[in-house]
Length: 404
Image (cartoon, rainbow, N blue to C red; front, side, top):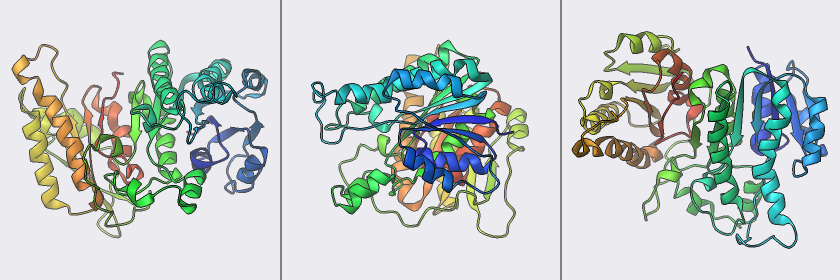
């Protein structure tokens, strides 16, 4: 059942979309933002019948304001550290004299840790904490001040907290290019070349805030336990693309997130996996559906044969589907004592998955993989999200669920 979630940066962009998404699901939302007027607009748009939110105005660049929140908080099941800022046009060394650099670090890197500290007495057993990072934390983005550095630090902070508090489920989301209000203003003013930006995204479109809201709705749910310590990269494959040529434009618009999935599980010899996957809902034959294949042939591959199994699965999928479908591969874990001559196999398979994601993206075809590092039943909620239409901006990723 939904519980109570605190969302920082709740009044705009990803935070706003996430608050509305969770409210529709029946969550009690604590909304924290520095913009009081924007919080009022969010409350005015609150879904009918949803639990009334608790709105708290706080500038999270100030430690004292964060500390003061502690006296106002109810018991919490989840915390989403979403608030952040960039520094468009600034060099890494800029902002030291006027305090701009310190404000950025205070909000992007220090505030999430302070929020965890102040929320700890209010977090129920098994609480979920999600830090919203950025693709900028995975690669250097120049002329955005310390933004990349702050997000790289937040990713490391997330992974370390997950190890320190295994009783919580701590994860991070790494958005790619998202059509927030700020980005839309840049497009409208022609300060952002949209065709050029899209030419670096395999799925050939910009994410909407609702794409991120769907991911966050999954990550704060109880089924996200296998994602503890993990970074979910939701960027349409842009972080994987290394080509010098522009990618082709999208052939079709995205589907609705609630499009029913037409699921096919193939090459699944394990009885445990068969039983687990039987729990996944699938659509009937009528109406528009989202074809999804979960392929287990790599689980049966001999050591050194994973790449060949991945390519076989990809050929079979591509022969069946021309557009708007997903392929999720189940991969075996690599033995720690593998012969050095065979050690290239898993790495080659992962890069093949990333390359296929780049080649297929314009047609709306997605490919992801899940390493079988936890019990099949534990992976069902993750597979439910990854394979369906809710995850249409997720491609080219190899997910490593944590051991239960």
